[in-house]
Structures are given as C-alpha cells and as structure tokens.
Image 1 (tube, rainbow, N blue to C red):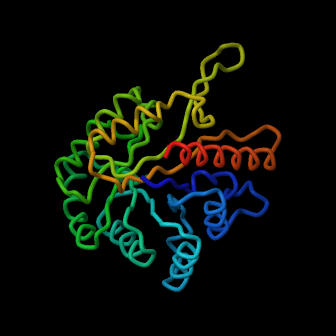
Image 2 (spheres, rainbow, N blue to C red):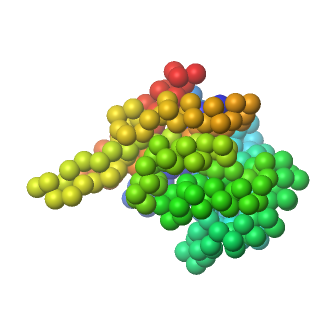
Length: 269
C-alpha cells in the first residue's frame, strides 16, 4: 500500500474562504514535502476545464515530485466516465474514484449495474480501475451488489466507513461487507461530541487515532480479504469544521491534521 493525500485534505485552503486558494501545483508540492506518495485529485471541478497541455504540466509536476496521481469524480453515466478515463490517460492515472449519485441522477442498483457494465470494459482495456465510494446515500449492501453484478477486476469499492454512519451503518459492518472489493481507502477519523446544553451531537472529523476509526482493524480486514493485492492506496482526507477564529486558524489546523495523518500512516509501514 502507498500513502497519499486528497484534495479533500485541503478543503478550506482551496475554498472561496481562502484569501488566495491553493493551486493544484501547490497541493502537489505540499504532498511531496509531507512525505506523501500519491495525490488524489478528487471532486476538483477545475480539472475538467484543463486542456491537454495543462494536464501534461500536472503530470510532469507529479513525475518531478515522485508522486502517483489518482482522480475522483461523481456519477456513473458512461459519457461522464469516458471523459474521466480520457483525463486518466493524459495524467497517467490508474484509479478513478466515483459515486453512484449526482444531483440529477440517482440510479437504482439495476440501472447502476447496467450503466457500469457499459462503461467498465473501456476502463479495463486502458488498465484503469474504477472505484465506487461507500457513503450515506447508498446502502453498502447495494453498492456491493452493483460491484458483484458487473463482476470485473476493474470495478471495486473505495472504502470510507465514516461516511456511512449517517445511514446508521456501523463502520465495522461497512468494512466487513466491502473488504473483498476494496481498491482504494480514504483515511479520515471521526467522532461524536455533545452540543451545548447536551442537546444532540456533532459528528465531525478529528485527528487520526483520536476518534472512532479502527484503522488497524480496517487495514487488517482488507489485507485478509485481498491478500495478494498490494495496489490499494490509503488516501488522507478530513472532516475539519471551520474554526471560530477564522481562516488562518482553520488553515493552520488543516495542515497540522494532514501532517499528523501522513506521518502516522508512514510510521505504520
């Protein structure tokens, strides 16, 4: 397994709340400086407007820094997945993460399997794996059913057990169901805290190792289910709430969490 960082670890620093949002090049350089081996360009809308020359520049920068690249998007319509496969070719990417639903398309399991059965063979021909992420909008059992129906080594699951808690799925159950099909792992820790007056809870991120994520158990389950697969990368993400002190405090904490996560993962090698 290689360890890397996602654009989601720079969520606030690339947002419109940042006085000067970080560029993709800056994120790549920061990832390399922190010791990351992979960078996942995930749900990063500007990448869709890049022409071939600009994509070549991104690939060259990643090569210079010794980083592998991955892509992430949402949706499974074949024409959209084809667009990302073309970008994957330009960037030298061998894994694309997606999600079943978009704002205007929520396919059921039968439709999803049919759409993916149309799109995945082209991915297979290109040697690119498509991974569908676990999250609260789709039951994990349904996601597994779609992957099993398509039955291709180039279609699997991006495991992020924290997402599915909002569906009242236990992380340990999500891990157990997904483990045989995992092709990529999003690493973010999470915890519940009581709100003021003990009126409900806040469910948010926390530094890796301080929350409810059983990281060691998750990795052990995946390795047991896929003993010969060494191409499953672990990608750092966060759910960092905006800090009351403002942007500088939020950006500083975001960097600290990212550094802590990647150092923790590298020490576990």
